[in-house]
Amino acid sequence: MELTPKRERLLLAAVMSGLLLAMLDQTIVGTALPTIVAQLGGSDLYVWAVTAYLVPATVSLPIYARLSDRYGRRLLLLTGMTIFLAGSALGAAAQSMEQLIAFRAVQGLGAGALEGLSFILVADLFQGKRSAALQGAMAALMGVSFIVGPLIGGFLADTTGWRWVFLVNVPIGLAALAVVATVLPAAIGRNEDRRTPLDLAGIGLLTLAIGLVLIGLSEREAAFIVAGVLPLAAFVVVERRAVAPIVPPSLLRERKTAGILVAGGFGAFGLFASVLLLPLYFQGVEHVSATHSGLLIYPLLVGLIVSVNIAGTVIMRRGEYRSTVLVGLVLLTLGALGFATFDASTPKWESLLFMALIGLGVGPQLSGLQIAMTRTVAPRMIGAGLGTLLLLRQLGASVALAGAETLYIRGDDPATATGGAIVVIALIGVVVAGAALLAVPRLATRLPVPA
Image 1: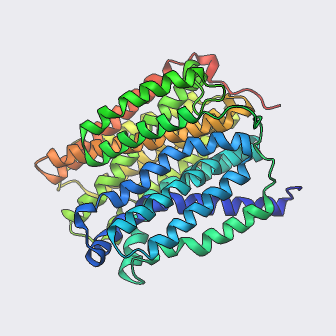
Image 2: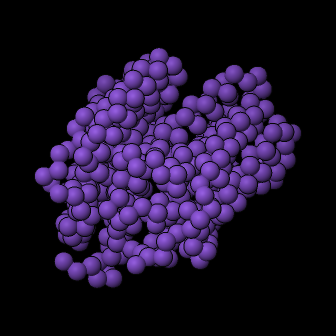
Image 3: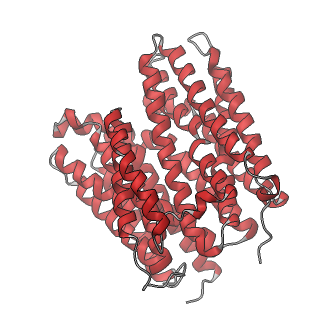
């Protein structure tokens, strides 16, 4: 089956629609949860409605990526889409919080395919500047979802009813599924012999380890995090011996890919802390509406959208990624430090400027590092490389959100607690990401010329 320009555009629209739905569902339910709990009860299960989605979505992401190397991107993407849509329809029909949590877990299990395979498909199908531009656009979608998701969730809950938070996925998702099924060739991405033994032990240990860690972060329970260390250690041992590991050890052994992975896990800390705490401050202290608070952090979104695209263009033109990503870290640092003196008397224009700087700084951490990974690893390793990068970014988001919330709760004054938490979390991410990139030899940060 030939991918004509028209078919390519249809496929891109379908893939990006699926990615947006999966990313929105991480945040869209949050603002609708008070309404949901009021109708279904189960207030003690409040947090689990979010955690039940996040855990399977994160755990399954690298698994879908690696299995697609064996069975092709289309089969795994269609499988994930079907599971996601089934979970969405069931969630809309839930009659209790226990049912809703179970159906959210089904949604999350499908979302892992939408979040991971979308980026991998772009790397498979497009090369050069076009691939960089599309990676940037899709990275921007991730930032958009964190900001507009709560707004959409609140709007739907207040107008059409909370069940439409889930039902809205169905018609869009079905259209995307139909396009993928009819347009995407089945052989795309298939580069591993099906007779190669599956890494079932690795899949099981990774699922257990990440599940425990994410639950611990969501509940702020150190016991779960500690319990996740043992299966994680066993996972490392198993991957060294596996014929086709889910996370190839070579990605962490080689300094150039290890630097990208560590920077990818920590570089966007400032984004996650800001998106969590600033709307909370605006609504709780300045008493603005949820919609208004979302509009107030739009400079962050605008900066992000601008920089993800500029970063991709600059990296492709220079043929080197580290300097662009490091410039982003500098901008992120300046934006975060601006919140060091944040309090109730801070002029609005100052906070808007600092948010814009954070957005400009985070953009290269998203698109730049994805482009670097796709151009650094061999074509047969793109699925494993991008899958691992996206997994670490998801884990990094959970760590940043848990850390920011903990610092905020411990603060006395809401304004200074907000500013202080943003500074601390953002700078931790900057320091670790910067150190990881600077540890890579300079020549290794140059991108090979595509064949």
